[in-house]
Length: 434
Image 1 (cartoon, rainbow, N blue to C red):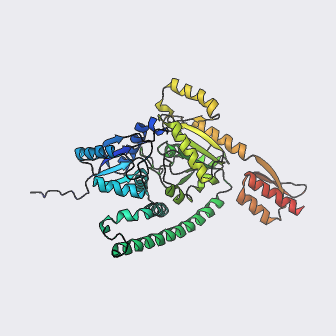
Image 2 (tube, helix red, strand yellow; image 1 turned 135 degrees about the horizontal axis):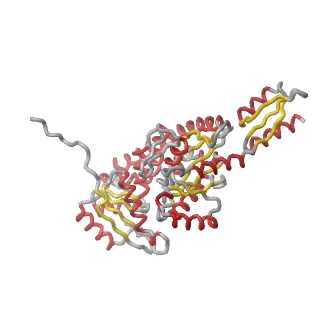
Image 3 (tube, one colour; image 1 turned 90 degrees about the horizontal axis):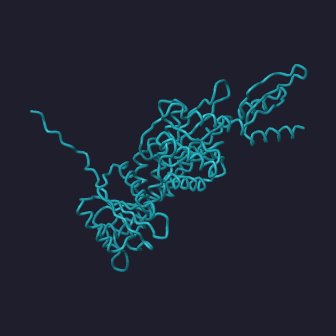
C-alpha cells in the first residue's frame, strides 16, 4: 500500500487588502484600480486575496492610519475571511504598523514591504540579491522595535532596563554594519559595471524603461530574437538589466545595444530606488530611452507620470525619450486611431507597437535607426598613420564606418560615428596639436 504523501509546504497566505486614499488627492478616483494592482502584487508574492476594505481619509490617523470604526470593520472582515495577513496600499509608519498588529493580532505589511518581498523573491544574480537585501535592511532599521514585541516589558527607564533594550541596540548595530558592508560591495560592482559601459561606449545604446509589465522584455526579445530573454505576464518578472545587440537593418554598422531595465511602479520604495541606482545607471548612460507604455491599460497616463518621476529621481530626465505605446494589438482600430491623433498633440513622435503581432515592431526598429543616425552622424577624420595612440582611441571610442589612405598625403581618412562628447574630445585633441 503506497504511503500517504505529506505536504510540508507552508500554507498559502490569505490576504485582506486595505486602500485608504486621501479625499483631497486623485487616489480616491482610482482606488479600485490601485487595489487591483495591489492584488496583482499580492498574487506575485504568493498570497491569495480574500477581501478588500476601502476608506477615504481627510488625514491618516497617527496611531492606526485608518479610523477606529474602520478598524473594527477590518477585524470583522479578517475573522469572516480567515485572513492571515493585512496589506495596506500606503506606507505605514513604524508606530502605525505596530499598533495595527496589536489590534488585529495578524501580520500587517504595507505596499513598500510587499514590493521588497517580491524583489527578494525575484532576485537571481548576486548583485540583485545584495541590492534587495540593502533596501530591506534600510526599510526595517527604523522598524526594529516592532519586531521585538515579545520584549515589550523591557521598555527602558529607571528600574526596568533589561536585555530587551540591549538586544535591540545590538541588532541596530549589526544591521548598520551589514548596510555599510553591502554598500561597499555594491560600490565595487558599480565600478566594474562602469568599466563595461566604457568598453561599449563606441556603440549606440538604447535603454527600455517603463511601468512594470508594460512589455519591455517582450520588445527586447522581439527585436533581438534572443531565446534567453525571460518573459512572463507578472509584475517585476525581470529585475536584472539584460543587454542584447539588435540589428536595425542590413549591412555593417546597423547594430545597437538594447538594455531592458527593471520596471517601475507607483509608490516604489525610495530605499529600493537607491539600492538599484547602480543598475539603473544604464538609463543615464543611454543615448536614447524607449519609454514603453501599455496602451491597453486603463491607467496608462498615471503610469507614464510615475515613470517620469522616477527618471527625474535618477537624474535621467535629460536623456532623449521616445514614447512607445505597446500592446496596441489589444485595442480596436478606432481606439488606436484616436490614440494616435491625441498623441500627435500630447507626445509628438510617439511610436505604436506590438511585440506579438507580425511586423508589430517594424516601426520601432525604423525609429531607432533614425535616432541613431540623427544623434551620431558620420564625420570624417584625417589622421597620420604614425599616430598610433590617436588611431587606437578613435577605434576604441567611435564606430569606424570606413577607413582609406589618401595616396597624395599618406594620411588615413576615417568616416566615423560617435557621440557629441567623443567628437568634441577629438576636436580638442586636434586643436592642441595645432
